[in-house]
Amino acid sequence: MAIYTCVLLDVDNTLLDFDAAERKALTAMLEEYELPHDAQACEVYHKVNRELWDALAKGKLGKSRLFQIRFQRFLQAMELPDNGKSRAMNDRYEELLATHADLIPGALNALEELGEVATLATVSNGATAVQQARIRDSGLEKYMDGIYISEKIGAAKPSAKLFEHVLKDLGITNRSRVLMVGDDLMADIKGGQNAGLDTCWVNFKNEENDTNVIPKYEIHSYEELYKLVMEPEELENIGIRNRRHSNEA
Image (cartoon, rainbow, N blue to C red):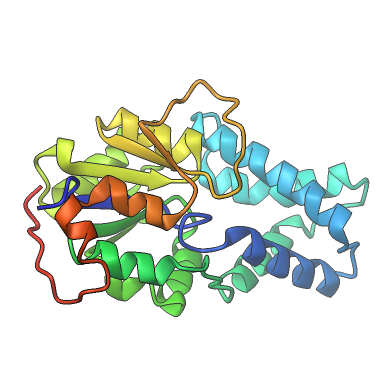
């Protein structure tokens, strides 16, 4: 039996390349509105958006408010007039974002391997319509025993309430066999810790941890995740399909 018999996974920049999706959707939307859509504009938006999602993780902002004001903030930062179009810009951006299901290389293979030994579920803070479309179109859905999106549940990472719902729905009672895996220290790692779970920081870009949130593990590749989840004899069976795993965690 695996070391961790249940693995909870963030979606964006853990399984799907959100940075690529964001860049494509943002560029297309800004071009439609005949606004600057070069690398500088994308960087300004990314900074504004990151600050707002960090505020959400800290409980200082609600998601509906975030969607309402982020392009207001972007236009202000770019010193451009709003003219009452910022909310429509957000809605169009979300529509375009839903069409980009860019996988991180190796993600599906990793899920196929992990799914042989553990129960898998996604836990995401993204907008429901956007995440459902991207998870479906990317091929992630077929590997998952559960797909959990904060907007549908009514609680967002890092709230323990979200994780309590996930564990109850999956029928998981032994939290010591559950691993939360994600790239966002403030949402994924802090959220897992709030729920009493072991945590694994996905640090594919070799970034510095400048927070006070310390994950139990840090990985730079999916292969490193196998070594955390699987027992030695299971590692020897990498590539062999139809191995059985227990949903009891």
